[in-house]
Amino acid sequence: MRLRRAFFLQPTLKVAKELLGTYIIHKAGERKIIGKIVETEAYLGPDDRASHAFGYRRTPRNRAEYMIGGHIYIYLVYGMYWQLNISTGKEGKPECVLIRALEPISNPKRYPLNTKRFSITNGPGKLCNYLKLDKRHYGLDVCTSPEIWLKEGEKVKPKDIVVSRRIGIDYAGSWALKPWRFYVRDNPFISKY
DNA sequence: GTACAGATTGAG
DNA sequence: TCAATCTGTACT
Image 1 (cartoon, rainbow, N blue to C red):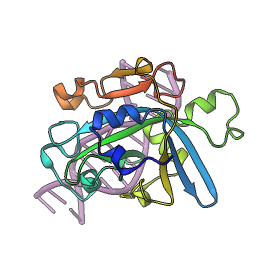
Image 2 (tube, protein in one colour):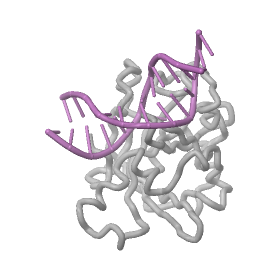
Image 3 (cartoon, rainbow, N blue to C red):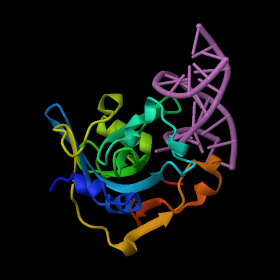
Image 4 (cartoon, chains in turn yellow, purple, green):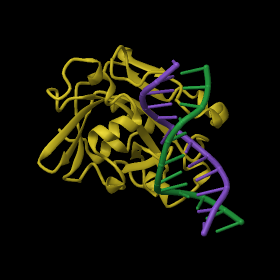
């Protein structure tokens, strides 16, 4: 069952947690690329110093962050890696969830059970490469797009959700300590640290 | 027009 | 743990 708008209008931290275990599907031509979400981070602008929308900052780049829940906010970091986020909450509320790691579901043949399989989607940049997502998908609505959407999966039990601080945002001071990163316990596909 | 950040990655 | 890497962004 496709995730609907109401799902993305829930509090962002709840969305970040419930996204674990759901499937993301990208229809690239005739081929469907599917991954199960196993790691997320929440970004709660405008108060969150680590958010691109800190203090209601608005730039052409982050405009998708202000869209109503369910829109794709994707952007480039380090000049080479794409990062996939999904906006949450009401229009004008700059909150989103960053997808940090997936379990690759499609293409099991191409990635047999070797170490490589565990390292093609375990990071924000790699997972975008796996899903073939980039700037072209900026601002798409995953509730209505025929090309990309999210599908309900097995619910991850609260005891299997590990909570920790977010990664790579040390510049954000005390905000960097917020326990807003969530991942599936013992899952081999999470981004290591 | 251009300096520069950066929510990373992979090698050591 | 650390440094190589590069282009869109956000300024002048």
